[in-house]
Length: 171
Image (cartoon, rainbow, N blue to C red):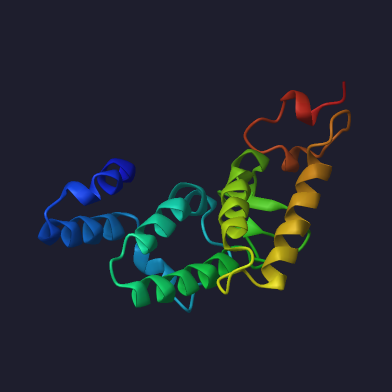
């Protein structure tokens, strides 16, 4: 949905560009990046489906100072997204497991790849994610690799929506 609008930005009259960007920011909950009170456990669907667009919207801003400000906010938002969360919230748990829909769902941790790709794009810049955020993601990926290792039995609680898939039973 947003990509067509973003691809066509240069074709819009200048007055319309601002309105299109405002509409896209509204539809993608762009203001979440400014939320300093965000609790750990951001919905992994939000990360997977909207993070890339948040970056594109920040970069589409014609005011360079606003681009810099928003990239800083996005970096901090990304750090809060993978802070260790408690209870049934989405995200990374103290044991490294990835949660979605109030339980372990390994299949939904595709959000990790989106986060990693965006974090990598910030590498070497003043917008890079913190060492703590990097270490949290490393911990989650190591746990995910252990959980998806072929040829092992896993507790039903770790199998998510596909309890009898080949990755959850011994071969």
